[in-house]
Image (cartoon, rainbow, N blue to C red; front, side, top):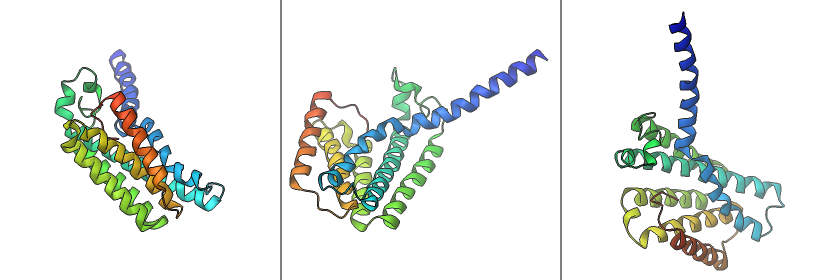
Length: 200
């Protein structure tokens, strides 16, 4: 009886850990970076329109899904190196809680959903920017994150793409001032913080 009770007690934490592993893999706390999407709509005073706000929110959701897909792929690619890292070894794929195949499948669903939202509810410009963002971050994860200077430039470009997509989602042209400010500020913070070897 004691043995059965002990096994039942151990089953509950396992279920909760599975949910925690999924959250850890998708990194929802990083979605705050996508707030930059609202910069263009806010600067053009479009957020007072319910329809424009709705479109900006859809762009935000699309980029959040895309970002999570990138994190999942990145962790699957880096699983062996992460397993030897003092802190990254606790990531779900590195410690075997989530398989690389599951991560890749989940990433495919996430990026497909993101592109579907952009294609169905937004416009071709946002879809193209989202696709470019995904490809660029994949290139970063696969090879470019270890290239000094270029890594920070790519991450800054990721923020520029998000700001551009936000403006495009409400049918306004992203101003040179907005693009220049976003790129410059991201370069400043990137060089100040240093490369964290993690996709934007």
